[in-house]
Length: 221
Image 1 (cartoon, helix red, strand yellow):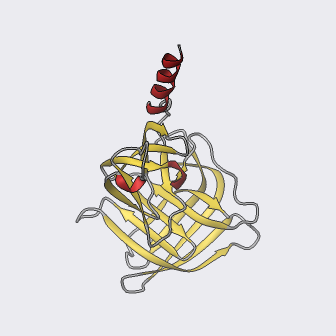
Image 2 (spheres, helix red, strand yellow):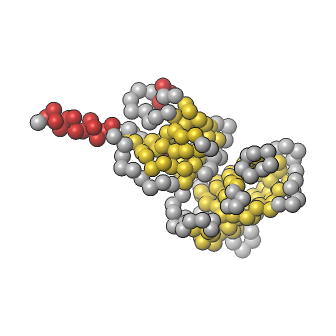
Image 3 (tube, rainbow, N blue to C red):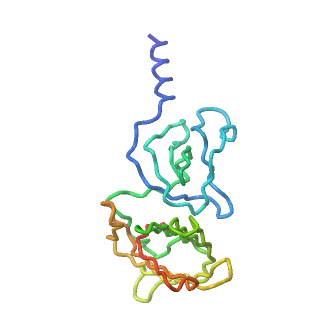
């Protein structure tokens, strides 16, 4: 009887936890000069460093898709995800989850530490933190284009704690760019039932022909 119970407990420990609905994530808790490693499988024993790395996600990575598979290792939960065509496993504590059908209220003090933004048709994504920003356009004529910026100024609009104007400069040449984020709680990407917190507009002075409009989720301090 004891051996049967022990075997059942061991099987439950090794099997993935109940499949979860597929989600979209962004990276959180990773230093800007570091990356989040994607592992070949969820470590069940021994050192995490012994598990092969199959991919790396930048600290401001967004549009990370969950497969619905998760493993509880006893000390943490590892999720199977897909990023830029590569599938692997990461510790869930480094992922911020996007909740379908809902949105978080703006930070009570108006202080935002990270905006995760995106748009559809054409698809693009942008992550803005205090000090740094990263824009990714997979629809460029030469393939995916990644542009990085330094955030020179981030101000709250007068009369509102939840409307923001962000001034940036491109790393390659220092040309200016500006973005606005306005909290509505009902920004739609037009493709799902999810409502995002912020409406977003972005214009890069280097590309005078294009401005981008989309939605953002925000993380407050």
